[in-house]
Amino acid sequence: LFGLRKIVQQAAIASTSQALFVLLLAAAMTSFPDIRSLVGAHAVRAALAAGGCLLVVYGLGRTRPRLAWPRELVRPTLPLAAVGFLGLAARQIDTLVIGWLLNFGDVGRYRLAMTVINAGGIVPSSFGQSAYARLAADQTTSKPLLRRLLLALLLLGGSAAALAYLLAWPICGLLFGPVGAEVAPVLRVAVPLIVIGFVGDFLSIAFRALARERTLLRLRLASFVAALALTCALVPAFGVPGAIWARIGSGALQIALFWRSIATSPEAPAGQG
Image (cartoon, rainbow, N blue to C red; front, side, top):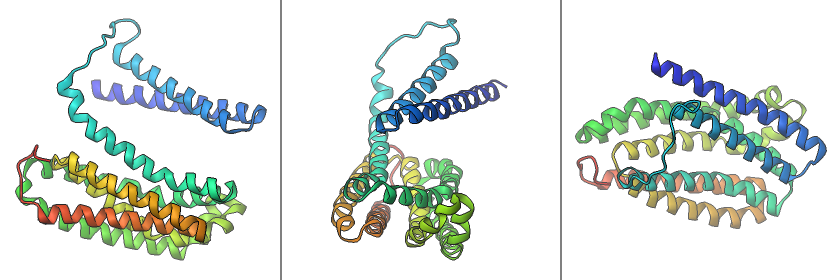
């Protein structure tokens, strides 16, 4: 019951902050339609969400918060925080380069296509969460388990990519209306990212389960550098397709590095990452 109450409170915080964000953004963009209004609305939403979480944790004045710096908790989280930051940066660098070198119409079409590509993110997340306990508890069987799960993800991702390619126009027309005809060609070019996302996201979770956060950080850093270099090289020459090809190339590199690290490393006890 306690856990259910916390879930309800978190859902209430998320829905309230999101609703206020939409209202604030609509009002701000009507009066001041520029990037500062967008950034300000996101900042207010983040502050509301953070404030709501503090209320849930500490109650309405019932508990006084105390500031502390527990090293035994903070130090292990630093690699995970860096991994998350690099992942976020790698997903946004293409949008920034497109907006800088091309125009905002191209940014819009690209981001709408990526919305469809990223819609299946729940699949690798579900696979990773279901296998997390087994991978963390018994690493002597991690490689056979990873092979089976990766094969299943390849089949699912390949099927989803084929459907997205064949149904690109109906999907985009249903989701984006008149703009869908402009988004569908971008989606067709980007469908390999569905497979790459399924496999790459799952392997990221698997590395955490195997207590190899530092290795994951190094591989993510290499992938980010490759994404940055490829995006800056391909977007000026090929436009939006160049950004997609750069993302495909850096994603494929990351998967190759992931699997090479797993295949060449001996089975190690948890905690040796």
